[in-house]
Amino acid sequence: MRDSLIIVGCFAVGIILSLSGVLPEGIDFSKWTEYMLYLLLFCVGLGLGMDKGFMKAIRYHSPHSLLLPFTTIFGTLAGACAAYLFILLVFKRPPIILLDAVSATAGYGYYSLSSVMLAEPRGPQVATIALVGNMLREILTLLLAPLIYKCFGPYALISSGGATSMDTTLGVCVKNCGSEFAPLSIYHGFFLTAAVPFIITLLLSLY
Amino acid sequence: MLWLILTLFIGFGAGLLLRGRVKLPTGTITLISICLLLFFLGMEIGSDKELISNLPTMGLTSLIVSVGGILGSSVLAKVLSIIIQRNKARKAQNSAGNGKEAIR
Image 1 (cartoon, helix red, strand yellow):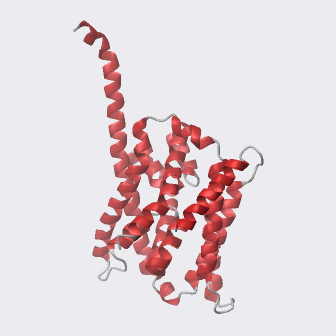
Image 2: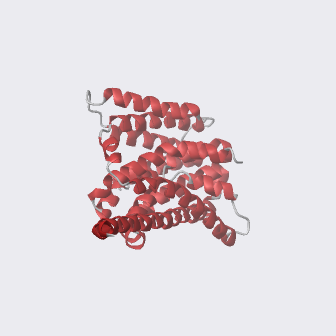
């Protein structure tokens, strides 16, 4: 939770700084965002490579529970389609098309990567929805963890965390489901983190 | 896009090589790089006047989309857990019924 607050804080400072007009004009921030994305991906890879735990953890779960990342992928896509019906009801002129809604949720909580990947091909509007939507997925999972666990069970709580089930939301998963679900949670998060770039690339090819 | 995925693999390889040799606070390094990324993304969004004026619409859309994603994945995960439970029960039943089957 503390990390999420720091991250949201950095995001807010960036917005406020550029809105206040203190910065000199004509700087291409999108280039900098891209460089930072490379740095982030290198760091994530480094962290996964140095982590001994998760390779071992993957082995001792029943074969069926290894399907959890797939149910998360397809459940989220179906949920996004349902949510789009709701958007059509709320807005007279929907701000995005169906495929945008699906692509935005395909970050599975991995907001930094998904928003930057969508920024160039789909524009800042979709990138913002991907960013805020995926951040909300993480924040809502953290806040509503006991409720999700109570209504849908342990698998759903891990699933709700999406790609963040291996780091940010791992704490609430273990706290609510028990430590025996930690390996599954890490495996699920790792799988989705690795899958996000592929799924978004696939969805972008459908436009 | 290919370079992004390649960067991830290069990092993973570097991590494998470094594993057990040095201790790096990878969590903190990742957090710092996320913060830098989000800071620049904030600057990019803040300098986009049209986007800022649309923020209420964007916020509501994001909320609807993310709740849809959470609910959709939760329901399907519930279905998976029911299947897992049923399989476990069947297995338990089979092993309990093994004696009878042997008599038949």
